[in-house]
Length: 137
Image (cartoon, rainbow, N blue to C red; front, side):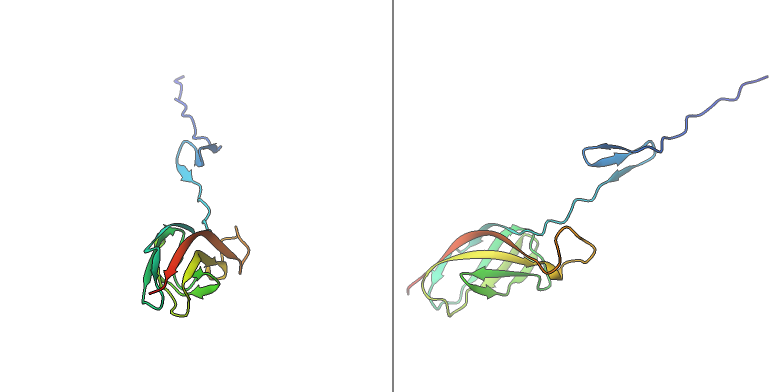
């Protein structure tokens, strides 16, 4: 009687190592959660003259398109132009008087995808703040 060779069956048990699920057949990567909190690295320029048209470039992370991100300068909300998740621009409103203001980027979560549940809907997530100076002419 001849013996039939036996083959080891692949394991159906997954092991987790550094956010990677793997078994003998495949490797599955866990999805990283979406980070809704914007972060400002810097702005260019960081000052302007009163009542002078100035476009400000904001460099950072986690900016969203389609009206879901806006900028707050002082207590004024300003619409942005979206270039990428790392770059947005906005225009300094002409009605702001000279002084020092804080710039904050805000993501409106109600515009975000509905299948993500890490933050409740209709919540505003705010970035760190940077200062901006409006000078007299």
